[in-house]
Length: 529
Ligand SMILES: O=P(O)(O)OC[C@H]1O[C@H](O)[C@H](O)[C@@H](O)[C@@H]1O
Image (cartoon, rainbow, N blue to C red; front, side):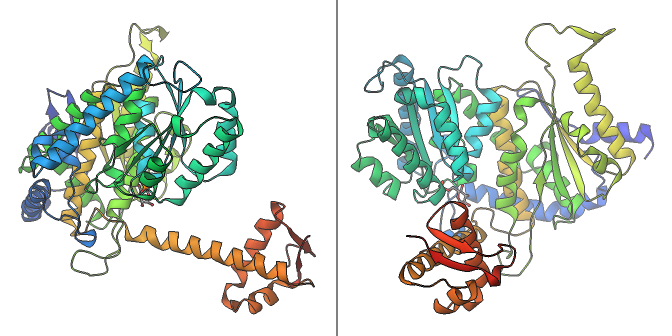
């Protein structure tokens, strides 16, 4: 396409909303007018699906659940007064709690103030709070937020060592919708032990955010934790940033949570429109469908040109991939749907993998996120008439051009600044785009059956480990790995048994191993008394 036509295409497809000062440009995604025409019936259905979801239909049929994250930013939409009250009451509870922590009204037993927070959670119970914290926490935040989002002992140790002298002033928020996620439970147990090792009462430093009646809820009640915030059954983990999951950590850091909610609500209003060209989420989903033939044939590379937004790609990775990565469609057909997401930030990535994007395998489309405001205050010149921010902007434009010239498509989202309102709007934009795209390709975006398989497999490995240990404790003579497998009636699990032994051995867990670890079948394994 020649430059004049491209300029016209840019103007034809540019979406702009003055209220949010938000732009979406899908002109560099190569789709035709005929394609847009052909997609109209699918969009009509997708708009209807979203409308019934918002009014409380069972939009997650496999789990028989409503999907209500839109109500969180506009409680008037909640399907009944009870749900509306749950939302508004929780919001009030969050604000009161944050104010009481900031003022010192709620304080640790031995100190005047809480200065730090450890947030223990994983997946949807970590990614939103991490993204929002990085994007919006002020440098002089009233409280410092830290995360345990894994069951990695070294990661836990490093944080607990850093906070060793401040533990008495540290609040712990344990976040888990189900209240039974093992990684989160492990983090909680280890943190609790660190408190006990300093003779600190854990309960008077702990807060839970979880579903009513969950294991975690019960622990919090039994142990007399400071308080518990509800996690609603009708909010999915990956869309929970605007529930207590995201709002409690944000409010504690002094982030304007009303502005986040208002930005999301404004975007929700825009993306509720049942008309393709005036609905930015519909435009996004149209572009995704076009570029990947509705089958996710191209990956989404997310490139925010702003350090504070660098966790957005990780946040979107869960939102998009856990929602859209499905084996079956809603009619039970095997479809292997999905849309792979990766990315970090520009211009940093230009010095890493953009080489391949420009010249290598063309299996992706880029999403540039541009922030118009460079910084507060004036910028020094780094060259005659040029600032660092001009560079960042120039590098974005240059990469977009270079990719397009080599037949690599891109979307560009432009926001005025990284404010709570814009961050709320960005989250809401993608919530809706994912929902619409799921309708276009006829899948359930709100369950995650595949995750269970990995969890079950992990649990069975741990069961096997217990069996291996108890067998070795009973045996008087060393055994080979295949002998262990045979004695446990688990010949088909011999490789896993070898790995269990190797791991126990590497951590001094009572296993004695003789022989060459590189020759698994010839090892002699025994219990060390
Ligand atoms: O909040 P939780 O119940 O602890 O769940 C944390 C995460 O775990 C699961 O593996 C799900 O796939 C995620 O969607 C969820 O966000």
